[in-house]
Image 1: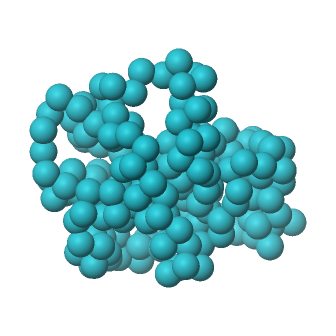
Image 2: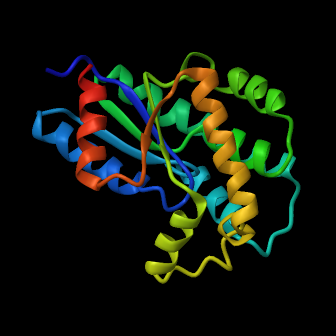
Image 3: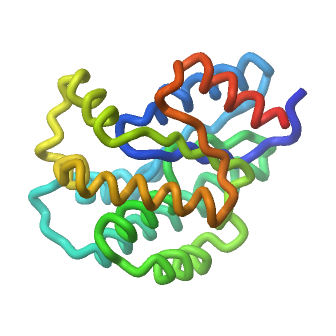
Length: 206
């Protein structure tokens, strides 16, 4: 049995399997006659999509502070224009990434003070600061990079994926810190797609 609509966030380093698990969860909700809003960060709004192009471009040099501010603008618009309205309508909202990514990438990865990220995000998101359901897919960095290479994905033009394994280990450490600080549900990205899908469904039902 499913409870009322929820705001759900699925997180993890690139290659962890977020997109796959998000799609499977949405398919499950649809099969149970639920209306679902499918969104991702950065993006989801017209302004967010424009900013996404800047964020993803490795040729545009900028500070961690500027990165976070760009993400924060996207989050404000997404929360106000999409998430709040969809929840009010009784719809589920399933999001690929939220401010947890800023703690992991700009905080642990790029050295921006984590307290600054958290405090500013609380001001921006207010009651949407913590999702109803938060899931982090954990995966060793080497396996994540192997997966990205198997996809024949060109990572050289992406401002974050081009930073290499040392950076991504810091990011992974950031996600594990978040798991401890906020009691976030963590699943093992090395397990099969089917097992992780079932684990997420069970957690949602519980």
